[in-house]
Length: 161
Image: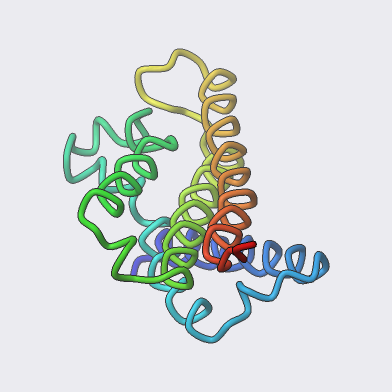
């Protein structure tokens, strides 16, 4: 593991721990289940690494482009997750681990890039690049915060009158 990869993953873990702490203060215990905790770590790592796959696809000259350094990879993988039927097979806890891990991993990568780099290919100027990264990191954070609650509510059995 390179030092840059390690830095992104450690920052992702820090963001995840802060997220867990905030959710715990709201008395949300779903995220503290051992299955969710164990399953979130590899997905979180995937989220922190996914943005850098643009190097493999476009070469180093296309690194930090808006296709990979945005919420687009999350929406594509979430669509594949649902379309492949994994959402039905995995169950609520693994579904939560997938969405929370991926969104926070991607968001942490973008926040770290805002601080360290700011330059996004195909977007002119550092300021607009930083706005792009910040906006998508915020969107992913909001998805993690609210989607987890929606998934938990959807999993609760409904009482019939």
